[in-house]
Length: 200
Length: 409
Image (cartoon, rainbow over all chains, first blue to last red; front, side, top):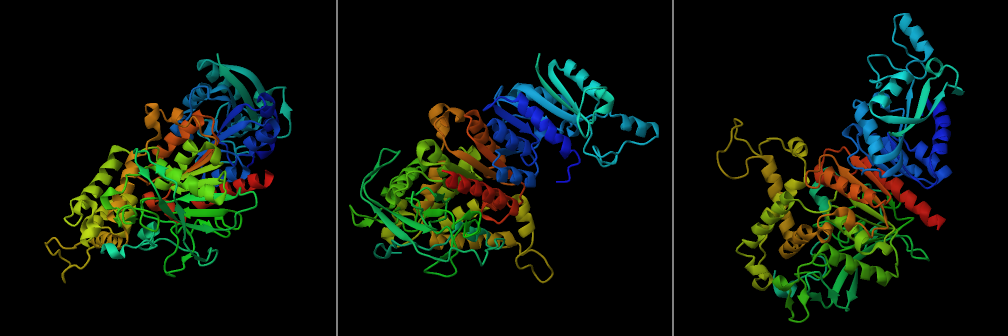
């Protein structure tokens, strides 16, 4: 995989594993080739299900022994019943979804707690790029403005505002730079933000 | 056909795949090779859902691969409307007869016969060697005809379970089927939860819609109103309701294909336009699609039994596991223990993806392990018989997982 944000993902895997109870039920939205669920099955013996649209990634999940449902997340979570899961994960997918509010609401409908990660648009080199008159292209977000899946980019503060608006209680927040966890000035210094939340 | 020459052996080992043979690519290699049908006789009466009983019956069976010492590597393949026990390989009787799921099953194929012991069985009531309406009723010495009992998917499963007993198989590693075969696999998971570890349901549905039943009824009326049907006892008259059966097949065939598929295959191409490209302004074959459907209907009517067509379409209509739970599929799946793989195809309007999703949702509600692939393929319902890399890769990966579980146990 040439996923540019693969490295920090490993660190957020560990964090997420720490938030997930052993043998609990986990739904991973946009689960890719099942790497996170495979990890959680190994580490926490969870009962995991992924949702993925891409054919090759679905095949990857089956090869890995991860249960997967092939569907477009934009079609909603009608397949899943209220409070069916202990944890619902949306990893680095929020920024590419059209119905941002809807998916966050759906996450707390089908699960007790939600876990979301997204690239922090407030990362200071982005601001520097904009000051120079250009949309940022970085290792973390390597797309030209006219050819990007990221249609709903936000900063850490933007996301927290939306949580308030949707009555979502942030239980925990962890922020990462490309090399480590960041606690000092995360709004500027973090490339990836990871949240755990529930309904208020 | 006269009563004296009613075949007990298959009328033909013809299969569902002939309907799409122009687009199927059979691999020359990786075949299970020349295959033979075995006949298993059962004398213990089989109680049927209808309340009737079948006192004695024969099942026509083929097997591929080797049953392991603890009999844990068995896969049962259930067939759809017009297929047979001849699932893979080349028929010993006719080298042109290739198994209907030969692209799926064989050495090194998605369902790998080097690992698994695969059983293909012809359903009761069919016409390829298992007891059906065209068989001789021992009580009368005449073909069963209209007296043959109506069968259901659940009855087939019970008969298949007895076949499993014969092989000493307590639990199938998987039961797998497409379309009506998928219904049988699903029924296995509901009615014999301890005897099936994995359930593989392709292009299927938890129940027929009114539209599905409507098409079946048109097919049945075509057969029943054929003057040569004789109330189902046409064998005694030495005739076959061939025209009705051909029309039934034509209707059915349309439902297996997608609109786009037909547009691409035939469009509005004229069969034999006049010299200046004009129509003939009559009711004989004008368009290619008419010629194709007539040919398919005609061919089918020479190898398939009309009573079997009635029986199997009715079994399709009756299948509805949620009927006993007031339509609640979740509760109907209460007993299920098997893990599931479901596959549907985007252009299948006979059993569209939404039907498979209903099954997925009910399984998830029961916390059953389920994987569901929705393949974006252009070939309609027939896609389940065709070679598609993505579809086959999912099935292959799933069966590799089953093989790994076998090794672990």
